[in-house]
Image (cartoon, rainbow, N blue to C red; front, side):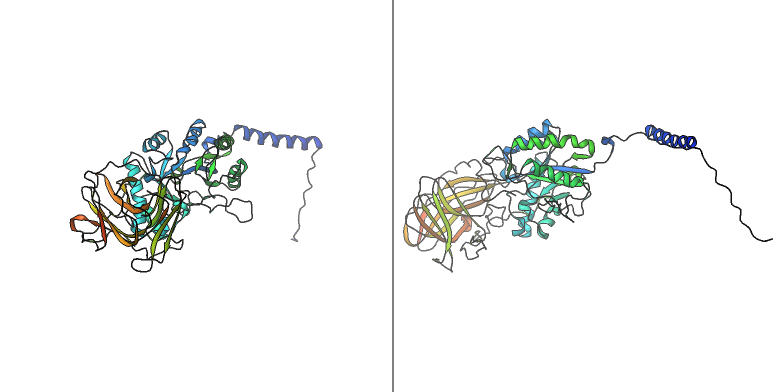
Length: 480
């Protein structure tokens, strides 16, 4: 049989039938949409997370705490525990009160050094001791922020070893619209110990800049940790005004309805707080040995500061601190020149740290402080002590040493170190108009100290140890 194909005639529909079919289809779609339960925004995972973070424990951040409480939001506050109680900084009681309101307390080292400039032992002490002290106050400490956003393998390993769950950097997320720019961190982050964040909020920023960080992240979703420092109306560096901060919170709050929520760093990364780690011990002044590191100022850093030394001073005066070639031994010495003196002093001191530079001391022991000097005015040792928590305090000053046109050795025995103190920093100061040059600085435990040099001028020690003063203001740049 020959093959054949059968073609059926198309069924033609009238205009009335076509309209009926379309209406039936639309009715079915509408019925399905209306009968499907709608997902409320609160039931959905947020597309964009904003973390409001605050560095350095500045006391003026209380204004941000109050505003966050008003708008029902929680922040993350990164605290350098060695600054607690110092002028312009939170006290431990204030920090625990902030945590009691549901805000997160994170670590920021003890004394805010650039961790990338430290040895592994000192970096680990800075990170671990900070977390231990905060934890001992009853705080759950999971998150860390690198001072100055400076991170290398040593800094990162210290954070891991000290039991943190995350560590935040700065400046890795883009602030401007552009092709292939990263505007949000991923959740979960690819590296929780180098969390990406926008640059820190600067004093020049406007409300639009804060909003822009969020709206750019909303295009793709993700996480934006925003970093604030000072919160004040005027006169502060690296700051936001309370007015602008409140405007930002007021704008941010209703965005939760479209999936943008405010959440702490710890809750975003997740994980319970791990056990604390004590960190490397602080060694005392060695038996029979000089405890001052780089006492001859022979090792000079790129900025002209001798390794393990820092510039110190206070009051109304103009001070120039430098290194010079007029050495007692070797090739370098330190010099202080003061002019326009009204009050205060200026001096070179061992860096306020946790043991890499500042010599460790033992309560109940006395110490022989020594320094060679030339000076055109009287001078004295100014002495500071480090407490067990890493905070620094002014302690006492020695009797005066006479001016000397040639190198002489100033020698003074301290009173007994008070209980609770673990480190010392000292230096001959200039507390009048004049110039002093110092070299070959030493400290010995008096139980086994060698005899002073032949040109020594020895001052008698105090009979009783003076009380330790309130905490001194942190030295150096703390912003970051």
